[in-house]
Amino acid sequence: MDKILKKAVYIILALQEKFAKKKKKNLSKNVSSSSKTVLNNGCSLNLTVKTEENKAQIENNLSVILKSFENMPEKMMLYIERNGTPVIRHPNASKVLDIIREEQGYIRELKGLKAFILNLKLFKKFSFKTKPMFLLDEGEVDKYAMIHQFYKWYSMKFDMPGFDESTQENFRKYIDENSYLNLNNLEVDDIIALKEAIARDVDAINFVAEIAKQSEGSKKAMKKMTDGGASV
Image 1 (tube, one colour):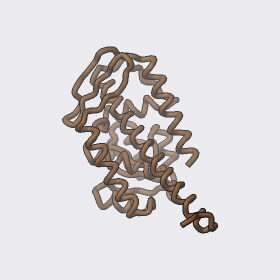
Image 2: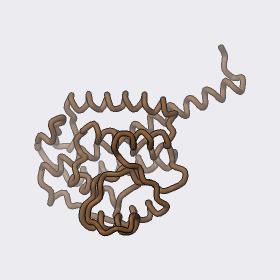
Image 3: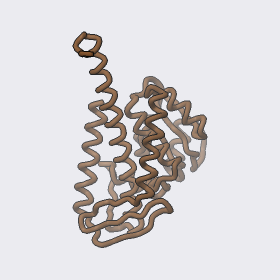
């Protein structure tokens, strides 16, 4: 869990620093039917009431689902498959994903060189297009990393803003230390959409942190009871 939290802190700080350097003043634009984003002088992200309502519903739904699953990755994978997204386990998944600068978990529809590399190295076929999938290494899956990806997958299914192909590609470039995305070269709509994608990732990180706190709190309470330290 420490690794997940460290990654979360690093991502949030890095994103804040980048946006502080690339201020865009007094811009506002509709980016989807469910969200309007406003960029002010501080480049803060303000979500509409509708988006906040959807976010609350997503988190309520996921809390119930994960509780019933006991946070078990295997049950999350089964749920994902039953809802139309194939889950693929491959011994070289992470190695190939590193090459194309993607991470394990939900992989949106890919086109072009990324799709060709993924198809060739993992599925031994020639194609410049892939269908959406959930791609993981074989072996044990970290439950918190899985919850993070499960949250993003569920949000995408819920039609939250920030998950379209070009925005997600910009997002991957933006958070990748080995890549470069010049915000000054983006249109206003692209910048606003990128902020939505970042918001979705931060939402997922915050949700994971809350689940982890609840889990650790339950463990401590149980240990206190079994050690005879709890008063009734």
